[in-house]
Image (tube, rainbow, N blue to C red):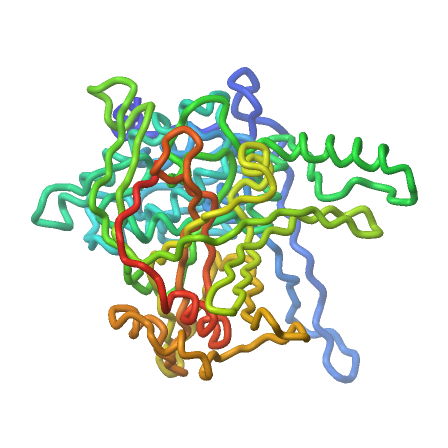
Length: 479
C-alpha cells in the first residue's frame, strides 16, 4: 500500500474527519481574523501605522506532533503522510499544502521550505538518518492502533524507505532492522525512556484515556475504602502492555504509548560503552522480516552491576494525588547506594514481579555530550525525570549524602576503560544512560528490560562512578 502513496501524484488527507464517511470538509471556512489597533504618537494623534497582535498558528508538522487532528492520532496514517510526495491537508479549520520542498497553509501564515527528511533526492549521512528515525519513533509511539499487533506492519513502508536512504549514504549494505531499532545504532536506540508530560497528555487525550494520578477526596479513615479506590486506580493505570506479543522488552514497541529519547540540538553523537554481540528477531511470517514478530533477543557485552534490589511503593498526598515511588538500592563495602527512577511500566512490573525484586542488573549503555561554541544556541529535550541518587555509610547515624566520593577507595578503582566516561570536564554537559534489567520468569538466565535512566551533573556522576568501580564486564541476553 505504501507504494500507492509514494507513487501518487497527490494525496488528499481528511485530517479533520473522525472517519472515512465524514468527507473532507468539516466546517465552513471562516475568515481569518487579524487583531490590530492604530498606532498613536506621544501627543495622542493617529498615525498611518497599525500595530498587529501576533497570532498563534500551528504548522503542519506541529499539528501532527500535537495530535490536534483526528487523523494524526492513528498509527497507520503516519507512513501514508510521510511516503506521499504531495499532500493536501483538509484540517478542521483550513487547507494546507505539504510536499518535499514546500509547506503552505490557506491563510498564508505558514509558508516556507519543507522540513521533510525522507526525500531520496537529498544527501544524508548515517548519523542524521538514525537521528531522524528516533524522531519518527517518538511521533509514531504517540499514535494509537485498533490492533497492537499492527505496530510493526504499520511501519513497513518507512523501514523500506530508510533502507534506501542508508544505501545512498553508505557504500556498505543497508543496516539490519531489528524489532523497531537499527542494529548499527542499537545501543543508542535502547536508551528510550518514559515520555514527556506533554506527549503523554496528548496520547491520553487522543485515545480517550483518563489520568489516574488522583483518587479524589482523601478525608476518610476507612482503610477498606482507601484500598478499594486505590485498587481501581491501579487497574485503570495498567494499560501499557499489549494484548499479545508485539516485540521484545528492549524494544520501544513492546509497550503501548509514547516514549522519549534524549536529543541534543545541534545533534551530538551517542558514544556506546556496550557492544552488540547478537541481535535476532523471529517474524510470524518468515518472508516478512518487518512484519509481526513472535520472539526476539539481543546479546550485549558491557559493564554492569549485579545484585541490586528494587522496591516500589505508592505515596498518597492530602489532595488525593497518587505517586509511584520506585528505588534501586545496593549494599556493598559498608556503603548503600540508592537510585530513584521511573520504570517503563510500573503497574505491569509490580503485577508480574511484585513490589520487591532482587538481583536487578544495571547495564551501562553509553554517553552523550553537549557543548556549544561561543555564540551558538542549542536545546536538550527528552531528559528523563531527575533521578534521586545517594550513597552513605551503613553505620551513619545521620542520613548524610556523601557527594563526590573522593575519600572512597572504591571510587578510585574504576576500570580503565570507563575512566574517560567519568572524567570531569566543566566545558561539557555529559549524560550517561543506563539500562535496568531483571531476570525473566519464563526463561532463566535471560533478562527483561524494566527501565532506563540518564545521569548528569558532577555529584550524581560521582555516585555512579563509585557504583561502577566494581562493575563486571560480561555478556547478557535480553528478551
